[in-house]
Amino acid sequence: MSLQQAQPISALLDPATVQSIADEVWPSLVGDGEAFVPVPVAPPAEVVSAWVTITGPWSGSVVLTCAPATAQALTENVLMTRPPTVVDDEDVADALGELANVLGGNIKSVLPGESKLGLPQIGSAPTRGRLDDVCALVGQWRGNFLTITVQGAAPAQHSSGTEVPQ
Amino acid sequence: MRALVIDDSRAMRRIVGTILKDFGYEVREAADGRLALDVLEEGFVPDLCCIDWNMPVMDGLQFVFAVRANPVYRQVTLMMVTTESETGQIVKALAAGAHEYLIKPFTADAMRDKLALLGLLPEGVTA
Image (cartoon, rainbow over all chains, first blue to last red):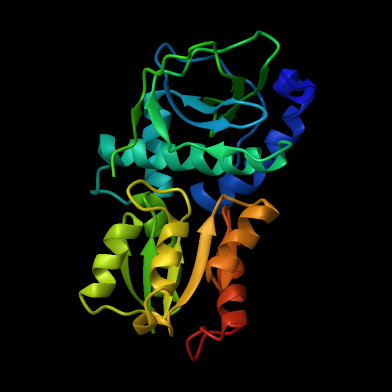
């Protein structure tokens, strides 16, 4: 194993970089004036996650986690739906997955070496690897709990997610 | 002018499609490269294809190779619209025959600037 492969994400990426990426993603995908605010709020009882994997010198996942109601509100914004249009589970998987995809693609671009991005998945977040191989940004959108976590792959990582349907 | 938006995300197809429609484009969509080739073979030959890179079935780079291998489509302008932002990936896409590269996330202004560079901004749209 090379020295680079042994480096945890905390040595390669800091929360400020993740925040700057989120600062570009939110207005573009979620809407003008929208922002991921890095001020933590209480986590909800139930959460849903969307993520993409990164495979390369550093391997792991970029995971977006929020309450199901927040995921639905994000989807309504991304899809620019207006009542009486209602978003369904496929819409939520698609929109949340695309947010994770764009976040993940931009995070991949600041990591050293050539890496490959996986397709978005949604479900329960993948198991984390080493305790120090995590860069987490805890915050909120419109007052609702939201986290962006860049986490190393667990050994023989088991994914409990489903690929976002096309 | 006509555009084909190729992305496995319906959300992203809607975002790109809405911007292009606002510029006056007639827009069709496809969820992967294979489906996009089907649209071309049906006779919808666009002025512009906006192409995501990472897609199931046939990815964006494979689509670029396929289009460039067919002289019938030589007038079609190919623009990658993707999160793949490393220089190596951009060079790979341009070498395969893509004309331009727009990195996600982007704004409507960024899209307009790229279309202006390509000479594909419809009349009446200010550069």
